[in-house]
Length: 324
Ligand SMILES: [Zn+2]
Image (cartoon, rainbow, N blue to C red; front, side, top):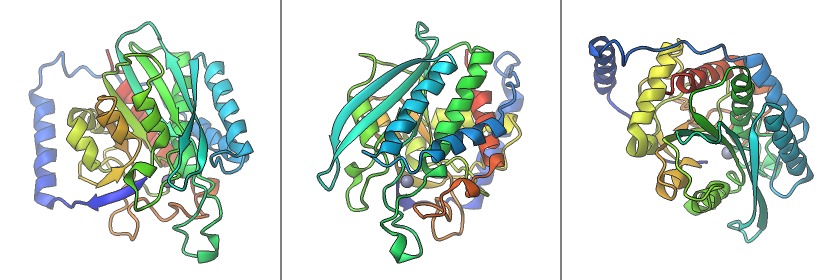
């Protein structure tokens, strides 16, 4: 993923949003305000799912580790009771390389027409080209955070759903070929998402909304409201930030605007027309808003913070268990 532009809101505007929210909660009618507290998301389990993916090595496109991790994801979602569909396609990268793209879709309650889409990319970047040390720029990124963390949260949600069913259908989509892009070409990112959005796994596929999880396990991460998410799916942003507050994680999900990010939610919004948000960290006041390990050799399991996985995972639980 790539940063488009950074937009700062005045603190006053942020305060106004917060004030609006609490007022809405108080004045809303009792029925609409009935919120159930979701079961507990297990961050230790999610952390193990990060480790398992990283044990294969970097999941760079066209690599053996990528193949093996794909098989592991299919088997694990099946173990937790999902119906799994795979999409194989050759896609062309910016440098002409043909990438063996494999999107993996794990579905629950397949006959339910009311569906929620949750997605994350599962490939990892072949080059640590943001590493402070230049000799590392051609080393593959392990992608514990950038790739594995979002998939790990989806796997733990799947494990939870097998234990306690939800009222709607869910499709977890592991999107491939997100991170083979280059700075000077917008379209070079999110190739798996572009493919899926143009060729959904079910003809005429519809979902109420989508949530993209990207880099949801970093130390000290906070998640601000991403620009395109607000443009295309403001009500979904509000739903998720409200859920974070209900789950006790409003400090991890401040009601502030982050940057505009080129990511997998772009094609899902623009091509598939499903309002989709991006839950992606925004590190304020640092040289890289994605955090210090982004596209460096330090994006490894040692830099994953279980408390971040918990905050995001519990927020997601709060969202899906309140969907009617
Ligand atoms: Zn990346």
